[in-house]
Image (cartoon, helix red, strand yellow):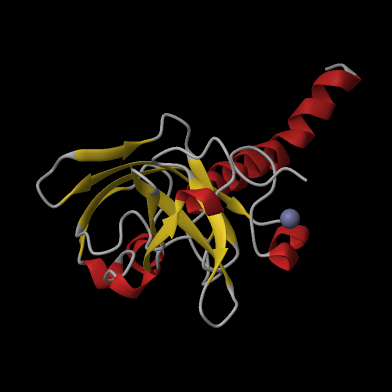
Length: 186
Ligand SMILES: [Zn+2]
């Protein structure tokens, strides 16, 4: 027996052990606080009409960082890569009810040029806080703005597939969002 064969023989139990623990680790990554979850998702309205299907997956930091809806986090808690779910969410569990006081009519002359229907503008609420408004209509000399989330007041159906789960980096936990692919770039 050569020295080389003896080396392999003596290493074998260790090598097997390493392979085993590596494989079990790959299957054990469950969605929990401070994991980064990558999802493919589709959103439909209550009638099943598709309203968003992003071909790019999105990644979020799980664990109450308000990166995604609490009901989505609740459904995914403890699940693994490959998990699929369809969630039917009432408006109050999705983007809330509409607030009609956020609908404004403003003279077109007050606007920056080039504003189009569907575009967004930063404005201020009555209490001075900054708020994003969507241009919903341009009618003669006036522009209609809506400060509600476009999906406010809607029941939504989310179809989700978990495509990856990993541990969050300390810097991601500190920033409260995901970095890198499908996350923030800065
Ligand atoms: Zn960051």
